[in-house]
Length: 235
Image 1 (tube, helix red, strand yellow):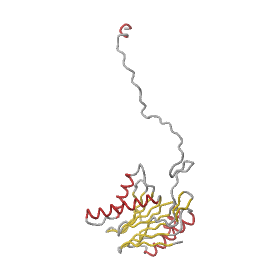
Image 2 (image 1 turned 180 degrees about the vertical axis):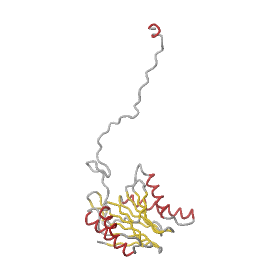
Image 3 (image 1 turned 30 degrees about the vertical axis):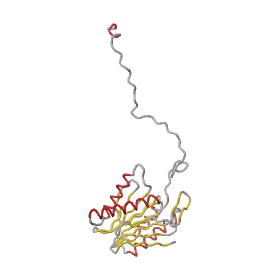
Image 4 (image 1 turned 180 degrees about the horizontal axis):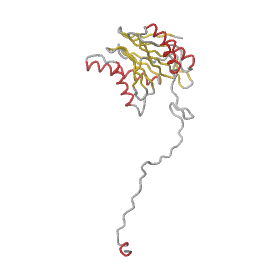
């Protein structure tokens, strides 16, 4: 048997390829919205949405921050989309504006194609798809979509990956914990517009008193069967 072993052909050695290639990581200098210690930060905001009898109220304070620096005391974080739908955001102002413009354009295209206005659920799902498609390069914003249609008044909350959650009231941003506590204590079904407005104002003021990244006033988008009303007030 030993004599035959030397006559067998020699197979070439096949290189082994690791299933999970090892990548040597190097510490990179901080870029964009990453802090020097490695922790990310989000621009501050207190943004609230609430349903009331016959409509929806969206509101957000005016302060725009970049880290510890107050960039503006007059930033707008609530936007009209259609005559029955609005959107309120917390996050990067540029991302908010892109989302609001995209949503307005898509809602107008839908109305022209179908021949009727888009409803709140469809508009929210459309925005969720936009955010999910950008999941590998996300738009840094939390969003509340609110409006009025044949199903009544409704609110949907979205995170930066497009998760879609319906609710009767919501708060997003750095002042969420304080604001939502005030709203939960005072909310009831069939609020009037004045009651909803007073409740939202109290919630945002409470958040401003504890959140240094929120402040300098309040913008409202009020949606009823008569259309959209935009109001603003300074604190």
